[in-house]
Length: 237
Image 1 (cartoon, rainbow, N blue to C red):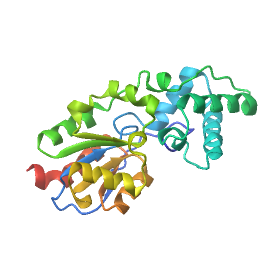
Image 2 (image 1 turned 120 degrees about the vertical axis):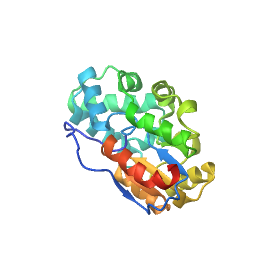
Image 3 (image 1 turned 90 degrees about the vertical axis):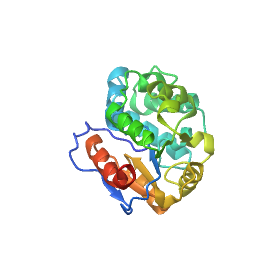
Image 4 (image 1 turned 30 degrees about the vertical axis):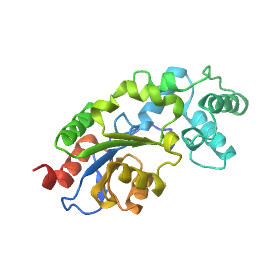
């Protein structure tokens, strides 16, 4: 969750787009978590707002204002780096909602509601299992909040699905910084050009491409699987 969305997300039919050569050299596939292994961030935000009776637009504006106080326009950077605890971040959002928008949010953490009822993208997870079983390295690379670590692990079993997991709060850098992609490639033991990164945010794909990776901009599960199959076909067959 790194870019705010306040309107109902449209169902997307466009194909996933990618960068980098399809030359049969793929040895590692790294997937994002939120928006790829889960429903879109827009849908999750709207579900959260419906559950808490907090209007989406004031909530996003409050998040933006808190982010600005930490010198960034990325609403999640303060807590997935982290610069502040999620509890304090939530308190600051709650106060801005109260003062600026006369909106009451009765939460000390967003995690319980944010992850409550959130569905795993099983079709994508199943394809990752197949890719891993074929001998290709599979990892998860995510900007993750420390307080949310236990929640995502309830949705997917990292030991069963991944060879490695790289999380921003654990390694001290984050997408789209090239450092995190260099670290991930090193941990997979492959060259950047042998790596594929799948993410729902174009700026994160751009960061990976700048680091020399192949990328798939995730917009639709079937399209992303099709594109991944194209990249992997010389390897798997």
